[in-house]
Structures are given as structure tokens and as C-alpha cells.
Length: 440
Image (cartoon, rainbow, N blue to C red):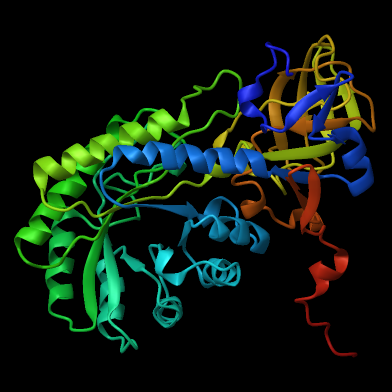
């Protein structure tokens, strides 16, 4: 059992204490980091499955069919795509790379839809060849490209409406306000719908909005749903298409720090689903379309752990310690990019008395290379293993080779076993794309 004062809601379900040390299932985290190397990422399948189940239970608030389309940008790899496809999930992808990984993982192309504010002709052609379930039209330029195509079968298009709504989140994560680069205005959406109706190879089958991510107040999302339902009523009233997919996007927030809100996922999804059902009946009526949600972090953030090894330390006259670990903004850009807050624990002594405040920093040549700006932490020594929870989303997908850093290995904890997902990068990987100059 985890002690009551431990913020268990931030950690994977399979995490527990044994002899006052942190274990994932039967595996001592200190031993794992030393045996497999650090930085090291671990994903817990039980936690992932629990989140998927929460979404399915919450979606019972929608009377019609529903689709969980995983937001691949949170993190996508071949084994993760396989896990999600085997569980019947769809995929929200934005590039040829994400589309290819999802397909190789066994995803049903009919459950894939393509996002992006600047889709290339090559991506659109690849999506058409794959037979994806939807291409989300983000702007009128993109529609012009689609009108010029000669696909093997009619293309199913969704319109992305910009509902001019901003949730309470970091400005970089707000995607639905008027000044955003994403989405069609109300007038542009009407123009797009009329143009699609005149193109024999195009079909308007869905409506979409996405106002941002990592928010807890659902009211801006509800207002976006109202706008989306009003557009659906107009489209079908004008005879311009049958709205078979109704998607208010994703973005539900998760706690990263003990002070963050900790909503129940089932209740949040149920509230969203029930509101969407009322909006549809009041504004549109008739049969319910498929409600398509796009969870990313709310599916996998809690499932992930990041393990680091402590190295150099500085003790300041203010009493603060600066503790350097062997990873940082090269595997987790969020603190530098968004000012994201995390917590952490020493794997061998997670409940030891605090030795005062510490700043957890990385090894890179940037003062912005830090993981945690301030945390009360027990006494640490070089070689100790530091564990950061809620590390499953937007770490590895934004990882880089800055300073020639090698991206970490990733393992899956599934029913007591450890299964490799990605090997650690090597220097040979860094050099693989380079062409040496010819001899002088």
C-alpha cells in the first residue's frame, strides 16, 4: 500500500512500496535504472487500460456510437500503436510519420483521421491512398488542394471550426481562439461546406473543434460544443452533408503536481458526453452521430515514469541545492516550454525526511534546462535514482538530440513482465543521416 501522504494519483497503478523502496510491480526502480541505464522511461499497461476504461464508461453519457481516437502527438511508437489498435482505439495523426506508425501498428484506417493546419499535397495523397476515415479541413487553401485531387474513392472530410474559445491553460496550448493558426471561422466553414457539396469526389461527413489542452474547467469546451452543434444544424438544414462524426476534440487536463486539480476522468468524460448529447438534441435533433474524442495525455501521462541518475550537486548559501541528473530538456521540454510543474521521489527513499529545497537540472548547455524548479527533497547522493511521475505524454514525442544527447530507452510493464518498447539511441543513430564530405 502507498502511504496516505504520498500523491498516489500522480503515479502508475502498479507502483507500490516494498521495504520503503519504490517498485513497479515486482521490479525495484533503483535496480531497473542501474541495470537498464538512465534516463529510462517505463510505461505501466494497467494504468493505460484503466484510463481507456474510464473513457468508455464516461462515453455512456452519449446515446449514440462513440470513438476514442488517440492523439498521437502525445507519444506514438510501434508497440504503443499495437496496444491501442488491439483495444479498438482510433488515431488522430498529423503527419506521414504518425500515419505510417499507426498503420504498421494495425490501426484500422477507417478509425484514423488526419489533422494539421498546413497539410502537404503528399500527406493528403497518402491519406487518400490509405483510406482514412476523415481528413480534417483546417483552412480554405487545404480545401483547394483537395478539390484538385483525383482520389481512388470519395474523400470523407471533416470541417475544423474555430469556435473562438480559450480554456484556462498556457497560451501555447490554446488552439481555439480567433487569433489561432487553427481552424475555419464560421463564415469560412459555410463557404467550405458549399464547395465540398459541389465536388463529386468530396463528402462532408464530420465536424470538429479543438480549443486546447491541459485544462480543467469544461465551460469553454461546452461553449465550443454549442457552436459545433449550431454548425451541424446549418449544414444538415442546407442539405450540404450528413454529419456522421461530431468531435469536440480532446485536451482534458491531468495533474502533474500535488497542488494541481485532480478531477475524476470518468466524471469529466461523462459530463462532456451528456452536454454534447443535450446540445445535439436541442440544436440538431435526429439520429446521433459518432462522438469522437481525442485523448492524449489523459490516456498515457500517468502511465509513464521517467528515471534519472543523480550526478553533480551544488549547495547554495541560501540553503537551496542544485541537483543535476542525466536527463532534462532533451527528454522533457515541458518545464522549459510551458513552465510545467512536476514532483519527484528518490527511488530508494521516497518517504525520507526532507533536507530542504532543491532545483532539479539537466546536463545541457542552457540555463532553461531544468526538470523541477523547486522541490523539498531528502538528502541525495551521486548515483541515486530520481523518479518523476506523470511522464507519459509530451516528453518522448518532443525529445531531441540537442548537445548530441541520446534519446532514452523505453520499457513496458505488463502483467508483471518488462517488455522493451524502444531501445536507447546510439551515436551510430546520430550519424546515420549524415553524408561525410569526400576526401580533399
